[in-house]
Structures are given as structure tokens and as C-alpha cells.
Length: 195
Image (cartoon, rainbow, N blue to C red; front, side, top):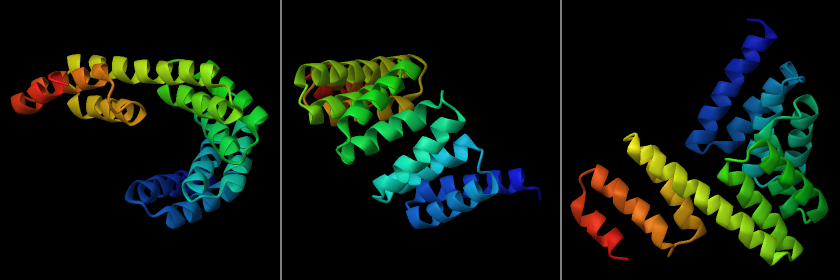
């Protein structure tokens, strides 16, 4: 098996480990994949994401930075970098990374969440609220679009994300009610619409 195929297999295994919560095993897979394919932005990004999940923000920032060097248009790496830089209190760099994530992923709610967190940490509550509202609106718009297509599980993912941002937001509960109706769960829909 050539190094590229081996790295791809390791990244796939690493993703499976991440999904099952085996972060240490995922890190080992992604580290090996990155050694085999050091010029692979996806390998570096996934390594950064696994470090971030393991609570290793400095290592995550390095890996995200390598991914960005290799592929400057890599939205997930910019978004991950913004998040870890915020946690490291490097707020100017975090704001710049978050803004780049928004530029690359203007329809990605996570980009606005990263921007909101960086702005909040910096003390810019007005801009943080704007970014938070953008993220919430994107989650809810995506939930409604998925409900219309009868993709209820993915729609629920968006509603859950919106409810994490704003647990009492009426539009989030309305979207949840629409999904309940689509799933023919009338009792839950009535509760959601009654909020």
C-alpha cells in the first residue's frame, strides 16, 4: 500500500475513533497519517481537531496552522484555529482567524459561533451578539430547509445546535415543532408550538 493510501486509511480509522469517543486512538491514527503525508491539509486539520478535543490547544493550533499553510481556503482549519486561539487567550489572532472562517464559510453557523466567542472574550459584546444571532439564524434556516426535504435527523441536529445557543428562543421551538409534525409526533409538536 502506498503512503497516500495508507494515510487515507488511517484518517478514516481516526474519524471512526473520534466518532466513538476514542480520542487517544484517533490522535495516534492522525499523527501517523500526518507523518506519512505531511503535505496533506486534511490530515493536519483532522490531527488539529483531535488535539482540540483532547484538550491540547497548543498542539491543535500548530496542526491547524499547518493545514492552513497547505490549504489557505480550508474553512474547518480556520474555524478550529479561531476556537483554540480563543481558549489560549490570543484574542487578536483568534478574531483574525474567526473572521477568515466567516469569509470562507459565510453560510456555516460554526464560523459565527467562533467569531461570537472571540468577540465576547475580547469584550466586544455588540459584535458578539451580532455573530451569535447570525449563527442562530443559519441553524434555524438550515433546519427548516431540511424539514422541507424530510431530512428530519439532520434537521434535528440544526435545531439542537440552535437550542444550545438559545434554549428559550421561540423560533427554535417552532422549528422543533415543525420537525415533530413531520415525524407525526403530534404531542411533542403541540408542546413545542405552545412555548
